Length: 461
Image (cartoon, rainbow, N blue to C red):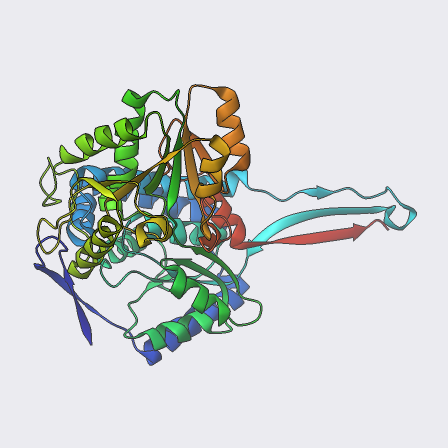
């Protein structure tokens, strides 16, 4: 059985990819588990470093091809896909460096009579077979975030890319093999059904499950994991931004526009809800709408394109339905609001959508930013915190006390000051809270998740 990989902009066929059934999944799991159980077959740290460094070099040599392929299959504009590729090979280098910076620790002994005459220290070992299920929106970099730490940790890994964007994953796995990684250490497959995916994820031979994607799927799979399987889940949210009355709007508007409309809003920490002080809310919304209207929407392979298509036509219809619902409820539509084609939706700004509409309460995952007026900072924080999601948040202000108050009271794993919510570097912690996820992402944090800390206690004789 095969699936067709089609460009989200014009539905043009790019390639076909073989899918894997239950027998292929069983073979992949057995191969990976047998490899993990055979300690004599483990890759030594120096070999892992060598492979990852060589992979980064090969990625650098192929950077433009990787960027074009990612843009074509995922719809992210070429300018942003190039940035994704640069992040990806930097992430591979980051993973290689962890083997020389992430060590164990000495556990003090001798402080009690029972511990006298003993020495204790820890080292790290691989946790076991890693199964990684990934999302479409960063088709190369997300795979790097899941696979490179597994290789650095010494774990055999089975990776399932998103059905819409498998080619970047397959190319990265090929690069790893070209760099010297034996085939059994990283197996990529597309499962033929959700049932087969469930068999892969919930098998008791899986030591660690890494998931990036929708909350409904992630939490459902987590509930079915075998006893002892650890996991990390990265979902999404409806990222809030608070704009104080003293904010520099000339600086804030382009940053909010970038955070809201980057990759057509298909980012788990895209700006979605902007709470602006009543004295500036209307002005901010108008200026944001003006910025949105100037963005070039279209073919992601055209160098001038700033906003590409949504991943599927059905997503365009869904986003438009949500916008129409908000407008019918009293929101003022300031820009966009009407599909440009079957595949593209314009950057859209609404002022004061009703608090109970879907744009105000759920993740839109599309190019829509909502602006709401507030009178009191704590009121804005309360509204920002009111949803069952918490990921990254932001505040724009020139006042340190305001910034620190927002940082202290916003429910999020990260609060950006005078920057948008979608800021990320790949070595920082990146964690969805509440329904937005479980565990901490970021390459060093994922590496630690994929290892166990093993204790040695020696008694002097």
